[in-house]
Image (spheres, rainbow, N blue to C red):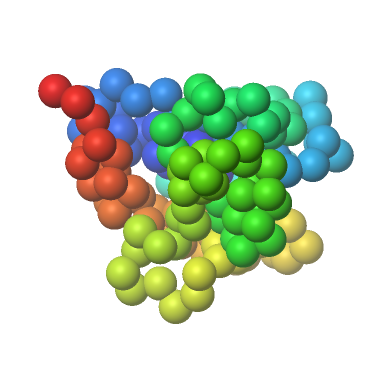
Length: 140
């Protein structure tokens, strides 16, 4: 969900930035996004095509910023990082939302439609701050 929301927001800002997503574990590798995620994205006018894959430590060389959605993922990603500089690339999404009431994006997986909508809203709220961070590090 975050991939599609951020990609759209970056397009709206005319920023050419690569956005991708992956999971910590390979449980869903090769599968499409959960239909409740797809529905929440489509209701809000976003794209939703996705095929799950597992994050690889070698990607630290490829990406300048790696966003975790909760503290567990943050710890897992930082533990995979080969260097201190790579660990510093890993940030929590909600740290970019000054009004966030929790550091974690709610995981709606075991909930109902309202949980997926709440997750979408939390991601959307962090998007402007994340885009500002990206802009601050882009070279002209």
